[in-house]
Image 1 (cartoon, each protein chain N blue to C red):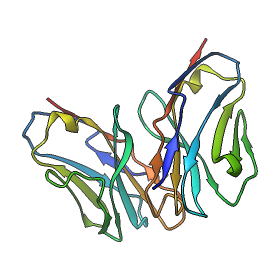
Image 2: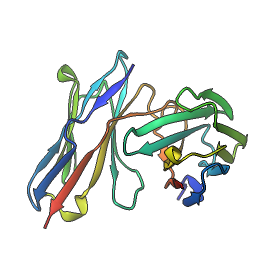
Image 3: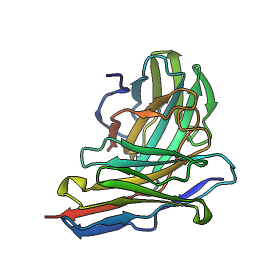
Length: 116
Length: 112
């Protein structure tokens, strides 16, 4: 069975600080996909990134970056120079076939609070 | 801009009533998912369909929940009878092959 653990229930930082959200996963699949979603107070799920298990390159998108380490089964998410608009619940998720053909296993989420 | 549409966005109902939630997947997507989000359980997969046929509904309480796809443009999730513990946000998502799933905005259900 697949499992995603987000050990940080809530993180609070002051604006402009860097913050890293941790994600550890468990799967027996040799090929799998990892995801991050953002859920702002409005409630919708905003897709941030999808990563194939064969691609261990770290990715950067603006102030967001992701560190995928197969050796430790982790897929951590860093926000650089955080802003108040980054306040949201962030979910890490896992799927076997990409997410569009099979279901996602979600972590419990990390509530990120950015204080002005 | 293609999107998954869920109706209603909010629903308040009394315990024992039937509730039907609807989802219009993105045109051309052949897989439709139903997820439920609660404070206690988080986001969990209830069921999903491929080409309108149920593929997996192991996450769904069988006694009161039912999911169907009457046609390719409509998926429904029905609860009968509803109970207060069914209060949650229900998300529909649709996808295709190895592409990612696209989520709707959710239906917030409150059963009083």
